[in-house]
Length: 410
Image (tube, rainbow, N blue to C red; front, side, top):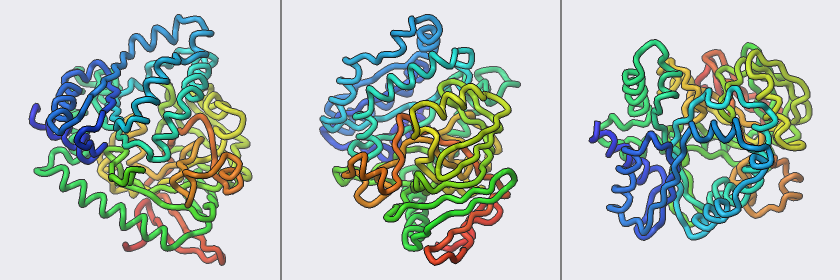
């Protein structure tokens, strides 16, 4: 197990954030992952990191604050913490998030309290988030099987067995169980690069999605760019924002989404699960919705800000045969579930998904159809039955996906 953990740490540092000598590293980690976090820290210093700062997260403390703190506390975000996070990315720190959220942690917290925290943190950390979403800082997210998360996925076995089973899936999906995970990721990144280059060369005007419960047309803004796999930061160093990743993605035109779309996997939002929901779009905005479970959380998400949270900021294509999909597991975790299925995201678009986006003002972004919001929440819409067409500027249709997988060769 220690050998696999070391390989996983090396993958996170080399392929994930691509840590450079004399660079700082900010790690965000659940306290349950302390053994793995220590391995990451050791490997980072051995690679020449100048400083490694770890911020610990504790689900129980988070819950107690959300449940009992006065609302005015939840409506504010500590200035000192914001300053520290912004200061580190401005100094060139890479950011590694070791992620293992309990999907049900905040399921009994009132919507008003959840909304207060979302607004306060998103507003305070806008500059920090801009560094991430504009690739000014190198960042990556890797999964860690916390006990509550593992028990949610495997409820019928003892907790230690559940954690072992989840570790096995994480190692397989992240290619850590291969003899050379870093080499395996180089090969995988090349496949994703081939896919995104094909779509960039095609320069489709619209995408049409069709499956049971879904009949959706997404216009793509002029100058849109497809990304996927490895990204290149402002310092010209490549990195992988997500491990795992199976997607190529771009941005929808914020005013050009029409039709109906139905989720195919649960969405975990702020410790609450939203399941089996359908959204209806008109001119880019959600105008109606239905939801079987978590309706209050969905309403809270759509109303997180005045307008942007009810529009789309991302469209991503993922083939059904991805390793995550083939596991047959619902992970109740966006990092994994989004890589099992085509998905779209409510909220903020990545400015890097349009030519010149990182240098646009808010007014210019709106004029080009780039959505802005305090949230960015992916939800899954793909399945084995999903068909996707690309529509050219002249109105011609070309098959991109058939029966949940690529219908093109690249």
